[in-house]
Amino acid sequence: MTTYWCEHAWLPDGVADAVRIEVADGRFTSVTAGASRAGTVLKGLALPGFANGHSHAFHRALRGRTHHGRGTFWTWRERMYSLASRLDPDSYYRLARGVYAEMVLAGYTSVGEFHYLHHAPGGKPYAEPNSMGDALRRAAADAGIRLTLLDTCYLAGGVGVPPDEVQRRFSDGTAERWAQRVADLREGDTFRVGGAIHSVRAVPADQLAAVGTGVPAPRPLHVHLSEQRAENEQCLAAYGRTPAGLLDEHGVLDDRLTAVHATHLTDDDVKRLGDARSRACFCPTTERDLGDGIGPARTLLDAGVRLCLGSDSNAVIDAFEETRALELNERLASEQRGRFSVDELLGAATEHAAIGWDEVGELAPGAGADLVTVDLGSPRTAGIEPSGIAYAASGADVRDVVIAGREIVRDRVHLGIENPETLLGKEIEALWQL
Image (cartoon, rainbow, N blue to C red; front, side, top):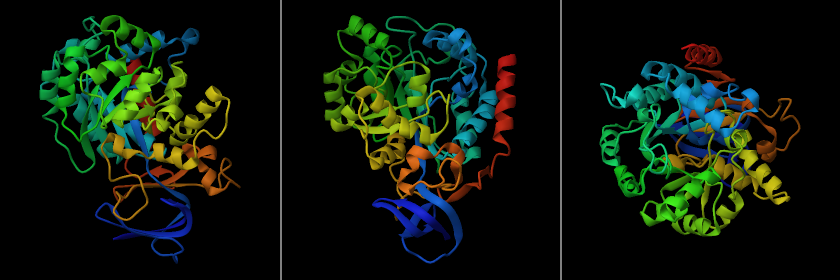
């Protein structure tokens, strides 16, 4: 058994002082406020680990490289496809090790990897068909983070459009062959498997149900939904339905579905998602970077949709930035403050269940032993009330990270991967030199 003593800790009923936390077999066994010092002392504020509900690890190599001539969504997309054509299992493993280490240092203890880079250039399967997914699994294990591989079905280059040269790397040809490949993935202690529909543009309507059954419940199913207005227009033109309406019609809109972005929804779409008790995953830093728009987060929550957050393109990896942006974007859209309570924001930020880790997300007996401590004496946080941490801190203020009962970060140093910034710089530069 391991014992931690926290100066302050955010417990299910609020911030408490002098909290002793005991851990055994990867779970919290006791959490006691007002306790005398014992075990390892953790300074600052202890929080449940953050959940990164939506990531494309390889997009990290685009950071700071997509703004030439000011940049548009479409110039970004072409740059992304160029990068996708350069990766192989070895280079993807090395890059992802750095990306996942950066996530842990920023306070994330789980990540849902929306993974569609499956095959060799031209679409030829590797000798081991899941080589690219296995590279991500190994990278996450090295970084110490919980990984849910949201293996993504991607069959078309648009509605009625075959995949192009780069997109053939993403495609298994049919949803049935995709599901057969996914069935060979084996889960582990900190590795789980889910599924994803890339979008209604990339999966024909007659294949949607097969993706829904390809990864059985209760494992999570995710989908890019109504990120761009053009997606809605194409779906309406082809099927006479909005993307959410099409998913509902084919039986994949349910309580295990997470709609990523959910930016441009109709009132009927919101009702469908709420009635199904689906989730919506907002990725504010990427949605800002790509100019997607501001999704109706408060409206969705009020309709019964559960919210979570992700770093998506990893243009920024900072759990606090994503968390407060949920509120701040709502303020811009509504011209009102206080759209979310701090508890609601923290709930979205620690919604591990969206990526299949139902047992994680609280500092409470029986929960998975993930915690993050945040410095309350940095230039950003000095003088704040602990309950104001979401509006003041940044990823740079994360001091310590424990995942599944294992200490991964101590005093801002990753204990498993030395100098991840050096690793990232080397690997990203090498990719762009190819």
